[in-house]
Image 1 (cartoon, helix red, strand yellow):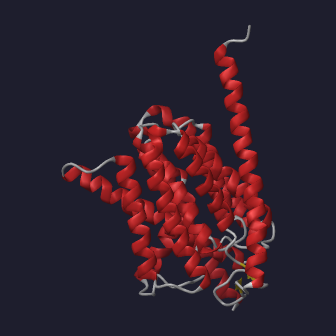
Image 2 (cartoon, one colour):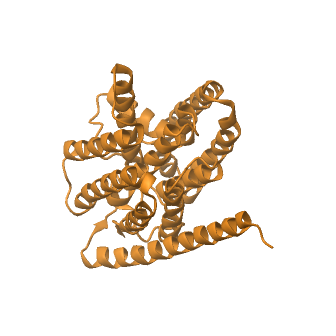
Image 3 (cartoon, rainbow, N blue to C red):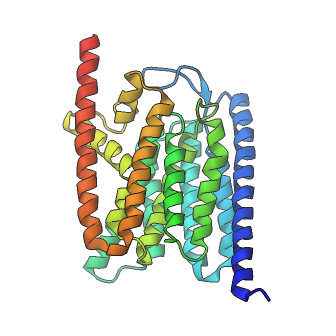
Length: 346
């Protein structure tokens, strides 16, 4: 007689496989439809001084993965009463972030309006996952969480400038979170849906993009990644320093680039090509080569996070500080070298 636990484990595995396959297929189908829509509406990113591609390419393909996450998330919210409230707040936040991105893909919206929307969604998911603040310390935690979530939304948007990089990074984070079993309840399904959604999209975006995520997709992926990390932190399964280490590839590049633009008195919120990944492409590396380099970094720190998660936050904080410091030094050295090489070529 087969034990009941074995039967349940097998049924859970089959269910997860079904969720994954359906999510990937629906994401691929919706991305294809989004490409058709973008071509019909002339929704194209044209080559230019601030672009990293050579041919006009449709944008807005991120609506496919977003639809999978919204539809699948709503299903699992209905199936899991314990996680329902937080999941509903998450889905509303995701929909709002995606909606402002969709509007921006069709007609540029003011940066301040996008930032207000991002902060509002970030505040809502922070309270839903961490609880209402009671006292100054908890208020400070909510404030830090809000800016952290909004920061990841914008980091994913800033870093979505070459083929495959934003979607692949979101998929890698999902893989590490699932491998570490750090998502409880229906949130594991959200992580699985995220992985399936980006895998359904990536064939259209790499090795040569036939459609871009657009703001509708890049900001939304950043919001999903931030929510999953916050969930893992909130239930005590992942120390926050290791969560930051897991997304350090994007945090260091976007953060250091933003800091350098502010220090040089540039208008930091305007489009530009000054991130390290953009300098690498301008120096002759292909999109695929650069995307692989960033993926390699995330894989290495992901394995490190898996190994360190059992030792607690103190060890994690020390290792994370060291790794991020190394990444920052590597960013400075690489940018200076590429800048000097560019001046020499002139």
